[in-house]
Image (tube, rainbow, N blue to C red; front, top):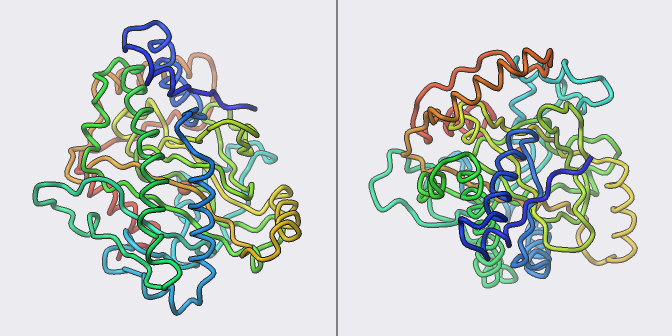
Amino acid sequence: MLLPIIDLDIYRSQSLDSPAVVEECNKAAEALITYGALLLRDSRVSEDDNATFLDLLEDYFSQPISDLQKDERPEVGYQVGVTLENTEKPKCAVDEPCLSVISRLEPDQRPLDITAHQPDPKCRFFWRMGAMPPYDTQFPALNASNVVPQAESLKDRWAPTMEKWGSAMKSAVEGLAQMTAIGLGLPQETFTDAGKYGPHLLAPTASDLVKYKEKDTILAGFHTDLNFLTIHGRSRYPGLHIWARNSGKRILVRFPPTGRYLLVQAGKQLEHLSGGLIKAGYHEVVVNESTVETIERRKSEFPDRPLIRISSTFFWHLSSDYDLAPIPSLAKRSNDTKVQSSNMGISTGELEDTIYEPMKVGQQVQNELKHIKLMA
Ligand SMILES: [Fe+2]
């Protein structure tokens, strides 16, 4: 199954009232409502910048653990700097509603079994992108200053590389956020204003493929993301599976072999703000058959490079001090859709009522971080 492809170039190159732009914006909103995910085409995205970024992160994560530990910041819930393996726990492993989502999937479409899964064997680095709030935030821990690794071979190229790739991803996902707002019948800046001072994070994960190379190893267990929209560049190793809402089908993410594409998935903040009209998308990262083949191929093609799977991930957030509550027009549409779905006899396992309590975005983030064991 192929995800819908949304063309950011059309949006960026034509006036807002042109029929092509209107159509593309509607397509973006529909894709997120139906699948919770889409492929975004942006001709500005440079595969070379992605490669430079992946090289830097492979080098970083091949350092001795004692060097990596210097970049840990548990006191701010690991929201900047490094998170080492076996720290974060996939929320789903202990979460009743999530286990029931799994049980309602056809057995051959289920994720790898996470009930016995310990914390994820993945590492991650968080690099904050974008402007700090110009006011006193209620959530200073979520808005901490960046950590720059101190190794001689890394420190000078770190910030420029992270900023270059991170800015490309940020600009692309903000374009899509505006397209989605228009497609949902809202003012263009609705989401980008709400996320103007969001703690957006360039968030590469790293999985050691020397240690974790067996087929069906879970690198990141089945979960949804807590932020607004997540955008991914191409990883060098396959292994990301996503579940499209309303289809119940597991999709192995493959980027078109050429062209500038990014994968976007909806997160919890968008689900909350849309009153459940758009649902956060489930995904997992595992060692699958294609991962194993790619490991063997890269071993012979690049024998000197570290065997580490880096994900090229960026989390776009709403501002921590923003009041998170369903937008009435979207909440109404969400309810109407639920009625229609029930009438059609579709049991997606998502028809139960979720209550989206109003709260600050920072509160929602802290609640989620406690669940996944990053915050006490
Ligand atoms: Fe995720």
